[in-house]
Image (cartoon, rainbow, N blue to C red; front, side, top):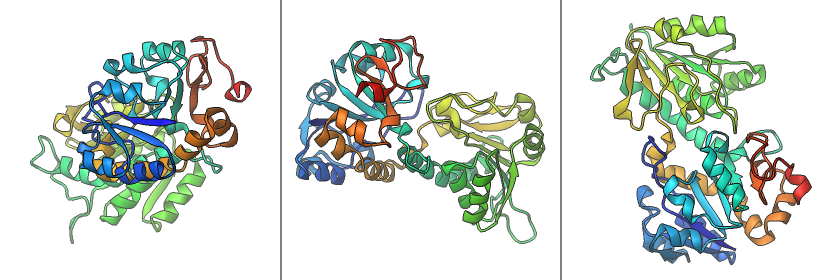
Length: 376
């Protein structure tokens, strides 16, 4: 099997995608195991990986996006293919990446089904404990980045920043940070904010997750069970509101109303990390860069997708480490056997042989819905 790595293109109206699906070191692991890899020229430049590094790792460098697709049996991407890439998808391709097909354009899904492409959404891989290992890797990065984003937006040199230091100083209280959602992103954000000395509140409907947050923050975060009334109370005094609610494969629920945002302090900050999944706040709109943070209801909004791409080298290494747990078995065993043998991979199979195999997609497309187990 040949693995193809095209250079990423920015998702429509989103930040430039600088990550690459595999680092040279990870490519070397594959080629060392007899797996052929083709890499589009400059695919790694956003993460400062050179073509020569990929050559030394045993990859072949190709000079067009079309060739990276056409020569590959398995196309490995970070983001879903953009419209200009759709013509390069060929019959019976394997396509793997953060596909988010539940919110992808309907014509792309139809094309994938018409061409019998096996689409594997790696954000849907599930481990025995119910966690999503590949998505978790990126969420951890975004959570750790939350304080540096919030800190900049609170500064007085921001258009409406409140001029608050997250951790405060002697005699002056720190910022109040409210985190909605205690998954991987929310937990890592809580640890990072608490480590800087901010006063942190974390809300979730899952009591066990809240217990884990308390454990991981050393009881430095106040935890509350989610309710609309609790959320209304917290938003009124929050200097920073972090939205990190995600349901893999589905649109995020809208929990923060415009009225809640209107009741927040002027110059406070709302960061909606769920924007990739549609956003948690009624006032969220997709913005491509931090420079395009916008003001609504006197609150600074940050709704930039692909935040881990801002630390592309780190993110690409982390993603590569996660994928190396799955790629050798897919490449060596072949699709049917790899899917049968791996309880972790199977939930990520969204389409197979023209059938919809994921509950996150409409059942009336292609040949209709079939459970992946029945097709293997």
